[in-house]
Image 1 (spheres, rainbow, N blue to C red):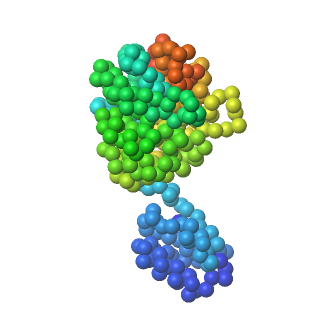
Image 2 (cartoon, helix red, strand yellow):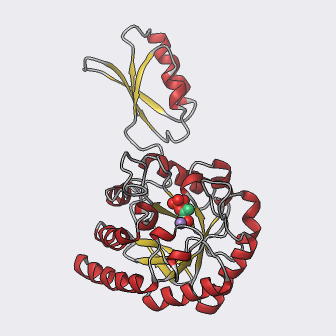
Length: 333
Ligand code: PEP
Ligand code: MN
């Protein structure tokens, strides 16, 4: 980090700042021979309050050299993180597809979809039991019963399961859920991030609707700083001016996040487009862009789905897409 000082800063005030930083274990060296008065900082600046530095009268500006996240940073931990859920691996060259309905609706539905996605080659089953809905009048999941049915499908197929948690109070219901999902709307729910940071299981963290990559990585940092290093990042589309698609799937986020972080990165072309016809091509594109996995919504009867029917693939289309994904993986490896 570099601090730019005001020309008028007295030597005494600058020394006061150097001493204050030294007390926090940070060495601040004056950089001379330039047109500006600068201080170069070295040491662990993770906990340094940059805003309070900027507020000092002698400080004109502060420039970061290292990112504000540390646990999630590739520059600090170069090796890829590999998530292992009952021998299903994700990251570090391992690719996994998580598929299933937007929401668990009934025993027959979740079992049928689970069997179908397993047969097509999916490695994990998704299914929402607690659904964040824009309208309070629409179906918001079967709650505890939804988790029970999802676990029934897990027992029947052997597929590890992923489900979204919306509130800390729901945690006990997630004991047997293999991966806990933090949805886009809760990406900056810090109390929830800290709570899942105390779990000993992977967390699938979705990018917020209008969040930058740095904000996503800072949310991952909250989970990791609380003690859980098993975080999967998920690009699920962001808000733009385009309304043809539900969101704009930011494909460039995939290689960018992988360069910035060692955490596995998956893409969700279902919420990323909102249109079932666009899901297969975007699944292939995300695979080609280097994603470590995909999350795809599949429903045995999309027209009757209680949530996100327009973006759900039928089992037959999902099966075809899985075959194309395998060919893309072969081509890029
Ligand atoms: C979901 O995966 O069901 C979901 C609600 O996704 P998102 O949080 O990305 O909108
Ligand atoms: Mn959905």
